[in-house]
Image 1 (spheres, helix red, strand yellow):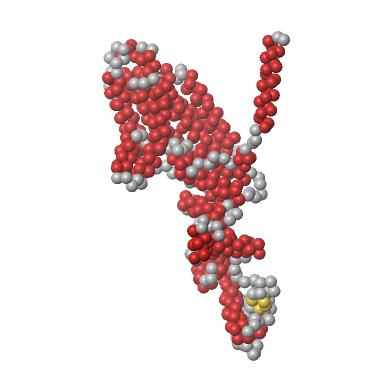
Image 2 (spheres, chains in turn red, green; image 1 turned 90 degrees about the horizontal axis):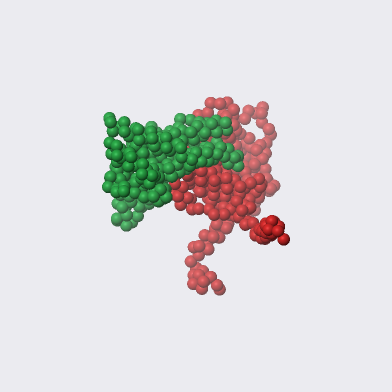
Length: 332
Length: 258
């Protein structure tokens, strides 16, 4: 056999050996999801030696790969994405979109939402004039955490900045009413109305004030209903029962329409008990003045609150049984 | 005045020698390729595309110009001694200090020239990609130029007493530390140990602070770069280079070249 054939044989054998071995080596799942080594943000910043911006870009591109074109990401990937964006925004806090990008995906549990909020707060520090970070912050607080007062504060800051959509004023008022203080909501809207010139914006604010007026009336009926329950030992079957003997609670029912509406434009609305929520509503609006969440979102919110209470109870449980359990290493 | 003429002649000679160095062209070519590659990298993102493109360009400029300053500067004096050409020069009415300053000035002008070429490539790629090119970009690149001036001075210092390989390592090490010195100082100030804050402050005063020349983030994100910051950075660069060159001259003056 000639020397050349030996060389060819060795070459083919080497290629085959390398290919065979390579096929048997697993592709790390991290490679597929863009996961892998992730430095501590502060260490990364300290060791960037002047290349902060390009390192931030590198981690940002990794974060984009984590999501890819998927319509949703699982909790682990979302958490990894949050850590990547933390590195990105520590290395280069002047970036704009990553703050909101993280907040969009960090929604699987309360801890993730709070991490998203932390990143958004960092965004507001470095982009104080951008309404969008405040808007996202308010949305996270209201939608995922049910923290209506804080959400109203954040959205109010968004409103004060150029470019914010005009509907925010109504949302803020609704959040303020939701957090219990409808008077604050009204004062807020009246102040807004006083400072608004645009006729369309004024009309929107006036609608919100009408809604507040009807909510005042509905709350009056709620109180009368509660008193009725005590007096009659049962709930009302219709709203009209509140003005009928033997357990008459009110002289007459308040108007179910805003007082400012001219008679010619009256719609013939009436008070009724909503069959789904069992709450008193006016047919003029068909609902109460509050922020609206779908039943599934309400259930999720309640579940998070419940698990948080459960977690706290477990952390702070000082009953003898709990102490004994801890002393026994948690095994009973 | 005569001293200036001698330094100018040495600098011009060093410049001519340096631009014949093939390493310089290789690094320059790589940097231009990398600046252009920013377009590909930026296309991987759906937002902040201009910023990624320009971050990449600025990083390439910083990395390769510092590399040229370190690796060409490291052999600056050693090669002259090794080839014995230093004797020819020093046999003329040229002091050792003038020789060193001339070498430093020549190489500084060389790295500034390649910096200008990289900046032109950066501006061309940015313009073609539609990314804005503002005055701040120019200021940030000028600050890199000041950083290079100090890096060349440090490379000249090490080149006076050690081999090019070791001089490169030492210069690279000091360049790294120079980008960390601010953090080391801040870290030291937080220490509970009574001696550490003083020690970290002393180290911060002695070690170079290259972060004063780093305004990449501001330039790329359209944030203002204050004129006084640039002015003080320029004074700092001149002062620090002066200190290093005096130290280098002292060492070189005592060195036995035989």
